[in-house]
Image (cartoon, rainbow, N blue to C red):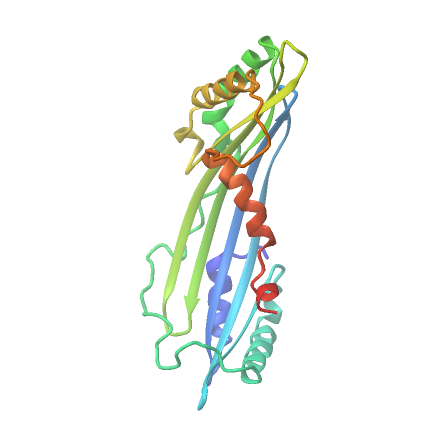
Length: 258
């Protein structure tokens, strides 16, 4: 799938025929990552992934029927058959909750629809490299061990509708996670975590994360013995997120209904 995403959208929409409406969505995901362990850089890399999602809508007397499918490896020579099969699936499907009396979208066309997505390259990590290297050196000198990773994302989406709409959107995001391990004077191994997220690494501060880790390290030096029982505990936002993420992963509406 080496074609421009907007071209894939246009080709798919051109395959739609009378009696059905089509929505074509091309998603381009660009990922960059930087990892380190034992205070040293271990791996880094860049990846790109392009997918095409097609949604067919067929208006029947009893309502709107739909079918959808996502393709990760599209042969444009097969585009017509892909669309035909999807429309047939929609015709034989169940009536959806989509209001058949509501238009899919306006005919607005973004001026940048045919432009290329912002290209992600190794330069995305430039604001991070020097302050991170300095922090790793300081950690090493203090007998601390850092591990972690930094990730940069650029997600681009092109949406085309057979009614005429053409929309495009690009979203950048960056995040960093650092785990610090240290050994207390009594030999107990302690660890602390700090992280940040923003649109780009230029908006982050490694020294600020160092301060967070330093504060957590000071807390870990103190042991408090409490009797068994129920206690009110104040959790940091990061701790709440750590509890919420597994709950989100395990949540299943289908299991709850069944």
